Amino acid sequence: MSENRKTVVITGASSGIGRACASLMSSGGWLVFATVRKTGDRDRLRSENVYPVIMDVQDASTVSAAAEEVASQLDGSGLDGLVNVAGIGMVRPIEYAPMADVREIFEINCFGQLATIQAFSALVRKKRGRIVNITTVGVNLAIPFGGLLNSSKSAFAMLSDTLRLELRPFGVRVIAVEPGSISTPAVDKTLGNLEEVISRLPAEAQQRYGEMIRSVGRRGLEMEKNGSSPDVVATTVLRALTSSRPRIRYRVGKHARLLASLPRILPESLFDSIRLKMLGLTQSA
Image (cartoon, rainbow, N blue to C red; front, side, top):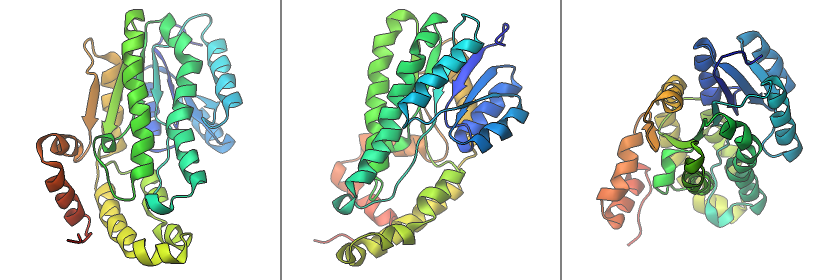
């Protein structure tokens, strides 16, 4: 199947950034292996000129099976690229975050990504290909009630940076992409059900944090809904995979460069005040 086409695995390809990456690269002549969790998404993608593969980053057996399936289609060749997009977000106050939720988001956003890289790295090394890891601009700053997302992505970002150094001697480039505000269906999943999130908190937590979560959620939802198209990220991913001199990291989408820069140039106490005010949170003396 691979013929002489460039080959890439893209995880989380059912919607949003992953779907945009798969569409752009397929239209550019790449052989795209698009991983999805649901058979319905697999069947739908079959008509879109990509090769869909069932894989759930939380299930090690499906990750290894996906790697074997892709290898079987490459006729002894390797992969030019691996793009790790799959991930989830959660809005939780750290003080009351259920440990089951903490474990789940780290399992998907960090451990599952690492398992995917380990499963496909031999194929990438075979062609001295590239690994592109989608993190978030949030790895550069703390956001109230976004701690689970940003900390899980930050852990993955550190693994990505380390992998960049470890694989460079083998000719494999590892590149991070840090999206800012991007309008995707994931926004509604993360910020569109805040009342349900609040209702699951203990009564004292609802009283303490309910209005704060609503305030942060409203502002966050507005920013994300008015964010850049996932196509902007897809274009950057393609550039990272094909540029003769790719950057170590790309910050892309609305507010990405600004939010990554402010923590480096402002005093922390001032930046804390700015964030709280922007999010509608009051400060005690």
